[in-house]
Length: 400
Image 1 (cartoon, rainbow, N blue to C red):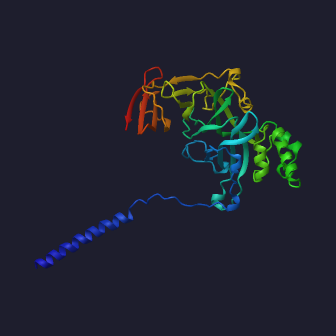
Image 2 (image 1 turned 180 degrees about the horizontal axis):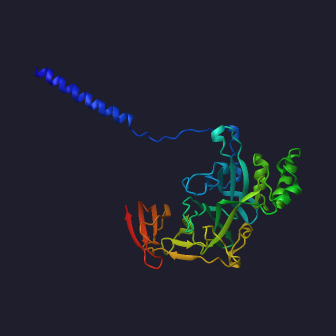
Image 3 (image 1 turned 45 degrees about the horizontal axis):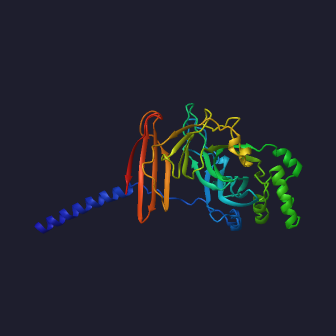
């Protein structure tokens, strides 16, 4: 009798446990996994730049971003992208060899666009070249600000790509920051007149010419009318982008991005920098403070602006010195002072502005640094807070 009772109890417990497990199995939350929607065909992929055109310290940077988001009208979230606007692919070469005597190396930025409708119907189109721009010096750092901070009028600040480049001039080095506004694609000035003069499609006019004549024809259109050659043609396109007179060109859509240039004071090497909204953070080698903050001038909608006396994009493309022009009004805030100066054999650092954990106009900055000094390896993390820009910084450091 006791054997039957124990067996019955065991069966009841097993059935109960099995019942609970079955309910839990059917009510479980699925694990989020990525789903392959579409795979690009090999003939749709972009060509790679020849390594002979790139500097020895070149680093390629890539960004894939929607052209724009839908307006926040209450029917959808603010982060819903506009499929009809398409997708942007941004490629940046930090060191691109040029034939200009005073500019042997310069950064090269290429921006492409693709229609996103292929994700639904499978009818994929090739990438469309929007514009190519050569910066007047090698690129040191780049940072894409995706925060889209909300403005007082309910709109969202545009996404900005900040590119830090430097220009060696005689015995000094000038650091510049060029900010590209991703959501401000605008027509190129004089594009229609240039197309009327060159004829459309101008990138196919050199198909019947020889290699040398085709290169000369493409360089003439790019330098005079700012019309890009066929980007799929390796030799012609790379030779045009490396020309001593080349600055920028646009594709068949005739669109370019709104840009604003800012000059950083001093000649110390910039280690890290980041952009969030209109606040630019950067740290410098052997500086007396741990970092510096610049409040860039901006309009009410969050777009960065430059005064008439500031350094415009055309001036920066021509490599003009900032000493001949007045810098736009920018408020600079200095971080806490450096208590110890170390000569790092090798180091790596990170600097970014965080969402403030304090109410009001507080500022939170996260800074990380790791390196070697002699035969010792160390790393440190710091969180620095400031309720107002006038008060002293309160920071907590963790070192290992």
